[in-house]
Image (cartoon, rainbow, N blue to C red; front, side, top):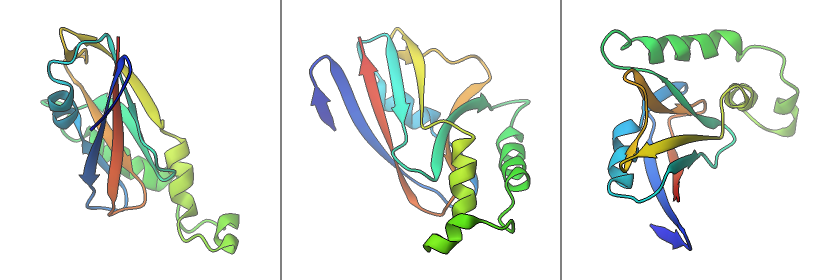
Length: 141
């Protein structure tokens, strides 16, 4: 953990298991900011083949992440003719999939907790796994 004036900056590391995977990181993020004083948390993924999304999870939505993973695989097909492969990159589709998500999201804090809706969760979106990924978590006043 590192600190900056008026900000609390944390770095969380996650291991993904599949090439395309939505990994629920809500619990780890919540634990990392527990007791933090502030009004907003920003989550940033410093990777060009991963993203972060807020999406449905839990009872009645347990298959949403799997459906989104399948949709990304269908929407951006690996077998397309990719120009980026001529530059030596073996994963151009993962960059496009990541571009369809976000590299950061901001979530309000209420009483030191993520102000997510009843069915919302925070997911690290992996598009070039399995890998170890970093998520920067910043709490601001």
